[in-house]
Image: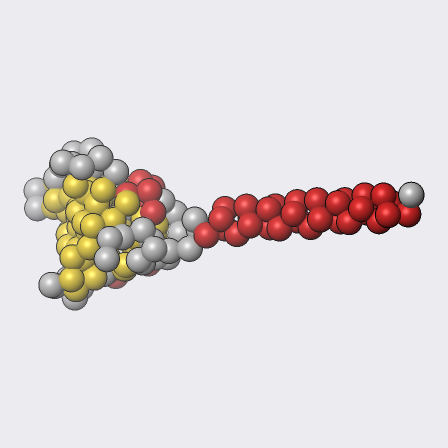
Length: 145
């Protein structure tokens, strides 16, 4: 009888150990999706790619172009999604100042960023001095190598 008790205790111990290991590995797998695959800062240029759904082009330099998942892209300043990313108090010759520009594309220059507004499809120049957020750029966390 004592052999049967020992066998039962061993079986239960192994079952509990297996359960702990499998639950822990599920957590590791779930958390690993949060780690950037290839993070890129779009400090030069950003361009949404309409030929491929949910893809964007991110330039971290003049000759450094990266293809990234759209949903992994956030603001460098406050971490908001690129869909909510804006530039403030922008201008275009002959048009009134636009309070909010939601960029589809942008090009960063020494004193300003030129951004194509998603809604109007008009290019606006947004001076860095016009608003703190105008110096922000997009960071994409899931980019191809």
